Each structure stands twice: as C-alpha cells, then as structure tokens.
Amino acid sequence: MPVLTTNKGNTLFLALGPSGQPAYPSYLWAKCLVALSVFLASNIIFIRAHRFLIPRRRSALILSFAVQTAALLAAAIMIQLGAVSPNPEDLRAPIEWTQLAPISLIAFQAGGQIVASRVLAFDEIPTVVVTALFCDLLVDPKLTARVNPKRNRRVGALLALFFGAMTAGGLSRVTGMAASLWFAMGLKLAITLAWVVWKGEVRWKDEAEV
Image 1 (cartoon, rainbow, N blue to C red):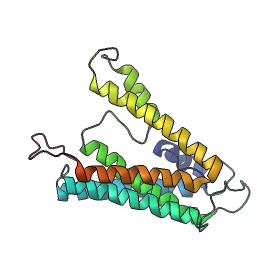
Image 2 (image 1 turned 135 degrees about the vertical axis):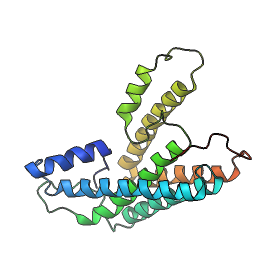
Image 3 (image 1 turned 90 degrees about the vertical axis):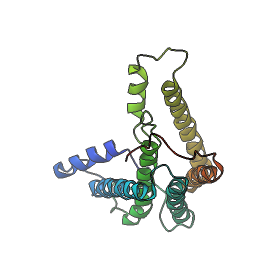
Image 4 (image 1 turned 180 degrees about the horizontal axis):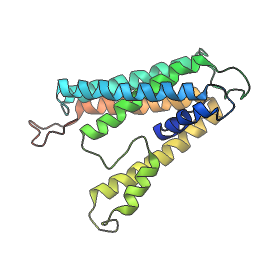
C-alpha cells in the first residue's frame, strides 16, 4: 500500500488527473481525492468538536487523541490481518480500492492532529507539511538567538519527524508495513495517556479559537 502523501501531493495528483497523468496506476487521482476529502472533513469534525467541548479542555484533548489513536489502530489491524495488501501496487494492475479504508483512516487522524496543534497554539509546527517547517525555521529573524522557544519547537519537530520516519522505515523493512502503523499508534496512545495525567490550569486566560 502506498504511503499517504501530504495534502500538497494529493492536490497535485488530483489536478493531474484530468490530463491523464500519471498514466499508471489508473485512478491514482481517485485515491488522492478520497484522502484529501477525508482530511478536510476531519478538520471540520475536530474543529466543531473542540468548540463544543471547549478547545483546550482536558477532556477535549483526550477525546481528540483517543480518536486519532483508534483510527491508526484500525488501519494497523487491517494491514496486520491481511484485509488490505501492504505491498506496492503493480503499476499496470487495476487499482486496489480496498486500500482506501486505511488511507481514509490515516487521513482522518491527520486532520485531528493538525487541529490539535492549532488548538494548543503551536502554529509554528505544521504537522502535515515538512517543507514549510524548514522555511519557517530559516526565515526566523531570531534563529540564532539564545532564547527562542518557537525555533526550539521547530528544530525538535524536524528531529522527531526525521527519526520517526527512519524508525518507521526500518520497521517496515524488517517486519512489514503494519509495524510502522503499530509504532505510530503507540505514540498516539502515549500522548492520549499523557493528557490524562497532565497538570492543567484552572482557567485559560487566552483561549485559542479554532
């Protein structure tokens, strides 16, 4: 199963669809359309859920990451049990529509992930577009300042993405794609549990709007 691309990549493949590019695999644009549509719908759902529950409320964050964890868990189980083939498609073979299920689940949790970053006011960390993170880091006028929390978070995010991708790639090579999804699910579960014990504040003075 091909890895879900960024929304920029999905949009480009979707735009190439009417011109018949790429020629193979057929209907690649359809997969991108589904992934992008689910991602956008996920944004709307998570935004409304946070607004209803109060954005930074502990229960809202626990529910958000629990749903994200469940989506990854379901995708991992599908791959682990062989319900969906984890192997790359034969470029000239008919499209494997069953792959839309895990793709949709991964896209759905990605929407919740980026909404959570905005709710927590960490706008400097674009969780779905890595190239923007590089640009934001280099354009920072305080890049070399001794104290710069935003720069530190951006560097930390880049390192986490790099080592996370390296670890997931190694797991996929040794044990199969399902291992990468189990790894991602485990991290999401750890974050969910962390919110349960996180020391909160009685009141947020600057409540982030989503």
